[in-house]
Length: 145
Length: 145
DNA sequence: AGAATAACTTCGAAAAAGCAAGTTGAAAAT
DNA sequence: ATTTTCAACTTGCTTTTTCGAAGTTATTCT
Image (tube, rainbow over all chains, first blue to last red):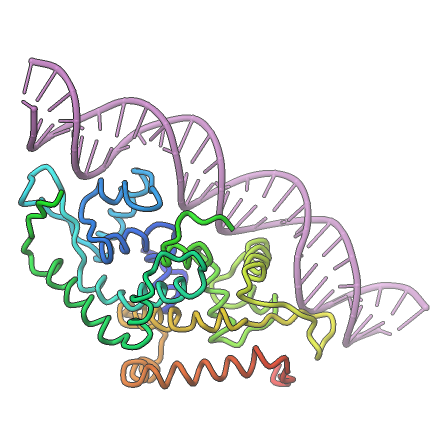
């Protein structure tokens, strides 16, 4: 990856500064999506070629990892790396700004309140949950699907 | 502006999810740039057509304002709105992630230390300074240029 | 065995970005 | 007073990137 500069904001943008990367990470972090077709069907409808390309780039950059799903062999399970979990504060601040400025936001009031009153605790809770689900190597058989 | 969804992350991305908007805001917030040609010359070299387009869109979205420069009448002075200053935490978190993950980062160690040890204070300092420079309507005659 | 599911690829079309040159109006220089 | 320069755009064209529809391959379900 060739950088336009070593400005930290530019560095972050070179990884996620397109219309889709952050949305894929949102699906992984906040919506519990772990498989290709789940990303396709969720939210804003990425096209499959763009999704494939972004997943590849995110993996190359060490933001996510892929491996065979132990529950169903033909599927690939996508996981977050620590590097990606470190990005959580950025996503959270984006949620706060969006939640405050979009009148028709879908963010629950409760979430906004928690983010305002005790951001550190909220961050820790989400971070711990993500670490348990993504870094342990274990996998829960989600029979609700 | 037509939204793909009311997800707060998507909402934020619809405003700044391109390669240049955040960089222009960075120049305004962290590098003290206030004029068109300063944006052009700083950092990663936007083309003038893209810069013109982004400034227009940011103004339409209420993120920045433009007005005649009182020091030199032929210039236009760009300022941040409160809505944009509210975005500061997002930018700061991007700086932290970029500073931590880019080996060749240009972020001073001192800044990283402060961000880690007392983020709220740092935020407040920057926020107050920005409010004084951008929201007061006053303008300092910068004779260093 | 046939249909459905999952994860991609490929390729043409559309959108965005980039570049060079031109425009407008104020200010500085001659 | 006229010319030159500066600042902030605007326009038109080319290149690059992104997008979307359809096709491919391998696996699993019926």
